Each structure stands twice: as structure tokens, then as C-alpha cells.
Amino acid sequence: MAVEEKTKTHEGIRYRIYPDIDIHTDYDSRTIDIEIALPGVEKKDIDLKMLPTWFHIRAVRGEIEYAASYTFGVEVVPEKTSAKYEHGLLRVRAVIRNPMDEAKSIDF
Image (cartoon, rainbow, N blue to C red; front, side, top):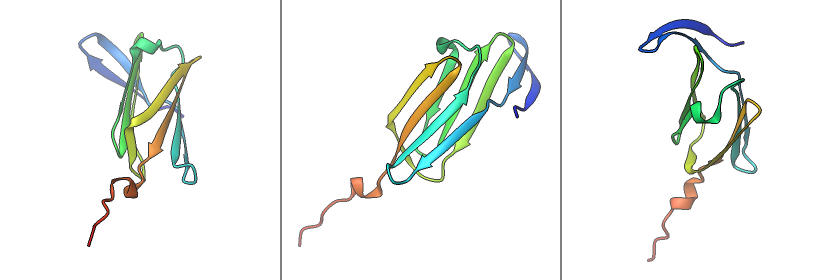
């Protein structure tokens, strides 16, 4: 269920809503799939920021602002993150960082 609050901005009064978010972590394939419901929002009005341990989403539709931050229990590789937006649903796929990817072999 979305949480709604009134917030004052420079553009007038808006309703800030926490969007419905569904997250599935697949440790075998080392991916995290995220689905975020943003009904009626145009693609140009979506701002998604991905960091290694969390993401932030902000999307605006008229007087409604969808906003959320979500943390992962693992690290992802932001550079390998992909997203697709269709019919009010933002689908994001993030790759879980393998700590051995940056390991260095030590010669002796």
C-alpha cells in the first residue's frame, strides 16, 4: 500500500507517494530484479539513481511525486544496471558484485 503525505514544494502542493516496489534477488544468477509501479508517469519524468548498496527513485506526474529509497543486502555493480519502462512499470536489473572480480593474484 502506498504511503501518502502532503509536501510543499516550489511548484505548489504535491502528494508524495511511496510507489509499489517488488524486488527479487537471485543469488545463483547474481542478479536483482526490481519492479516499480509508476502509473501515468512519462519516462522523461523518472529519475533513478543506483549506488552499490541502494537506489533512489523519484518520478513526477502532475501533483503526484513518487519517491523511495531502498537498500540491498548485497553490493551491486551500478555500471551493469539496466532499466526498461513500459506501461507504467519500471523494470530494473542489477548485477550482484562478485568480490572475487577485483581479487589480485599474488606471485611468490
